[in-house]
Image 1 (tube, chains in turn red, blue):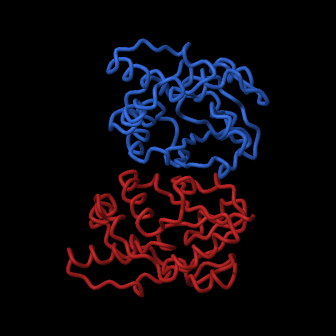
Image 2 (cartoon, rainbow over the protein chains, first blue to last red):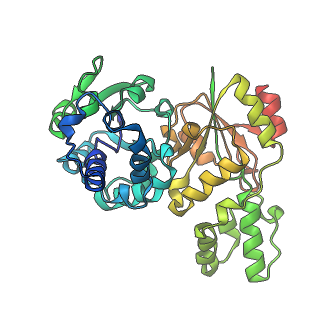
Length: 174
Length: 174
């Protein structure tokens, strides 16, 4: 059985939407995902507001309230019939997120066994056939085949097979 | 550079000693590591006391107060010159342990970058050349070369290269 590793943020969990929502609310701004084309949120927000951006990620509930990316539950459940599915998230960048991320997965993806959840930093440690991730830096390190999941910040990135949503993941693998 | 993945409990952290200490203290017993030869603590403790054993592992400070295994700091630091070292622990079995394990590593192994820490369940997900682990079940799943780190419960296990302490790890790899 081939193995697929799947990233969390921006792939099954809409972290950018929550990040924008909190930032806009507190700073009286109206940034949208369209403003982030080709950029990270960190690139469009002034340096003196970066501590606020950091603080949102470190707040206890941030990773617990994220929306689920459309169709990701249905498609991941179907993928499990034909592939071994692991969730692999770079949680070590925000250690305060561990429990929130674990609980979020329990709630929204109860069919993923805890044994198939990986909190890591550098995804070169993953032994899998495929990695679906929005982060080109992680895909470059990964030893299997990297699939770039479209996200505002990566629209201009070339060199990977790309899927723009979970319907395209379904088409590619099922 | 070859990559070595290293387990935490019973390899760099003395979890069994702390588990025995708490169990003996609360149950007026005098179990020692010698009593665990060829067995897990769960095998020698009566079933009706298993909830207590569980509770120790889930208590917030358990994984934070563990003793460091002798020589593991010095040898791991030296290994980093010649190998890429990852710490990989089956933390998903006790989700309440995430922060305590992370803080324990920060305190005792500050030279291991967070990007090289992995919390997982099934260690078949690790892409590494070697895995040093006390758990034969994890070594069997691992795709690289498994090195069994001697622990009371595994003294009778055959079929793996074995090291009995960190001096033997040093000899094997350096």
